[in-house]
Image (cartoon, rainbow, N blue to C red):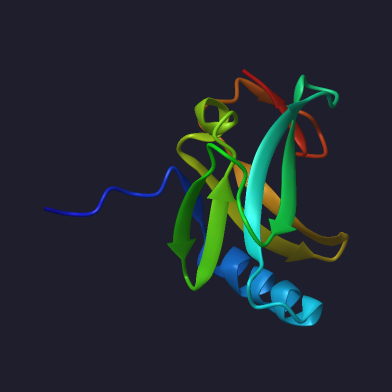
Amino acid sequence: MADAPPPVVLTERAADRLKTLISREGNDNLKFRVSVSGGGCSGFSYGFDFAETGEPGDLETEQHGVKVLIDGMAMMYVLGAEIDYKESLVGAAFSVSNPNASSHCGCGSSFSI
């Protein structure tokens, strides 16, 4: 029986960047936490943070050597999303491709359902 895909997919490029950031923090116990909060120009905003432990209800996966925590309350908003890391001449940022979002703001940090 094949393993189910993680609820939020982290690309290898995003994982590589996260490993660099975790290394700079000097704490190998850090996990990448994904959450959603109300606000932003489109209604909801993505939240990315590092934490040593998850909150009650968080789901933990490991992808490309990075431990990922997904806020249990955010799960219905981010299920099936992909997090990537992109660099360009105008800057670098994590980006989210979310099949649940009906629209996104111009900066890509907020969305609506």
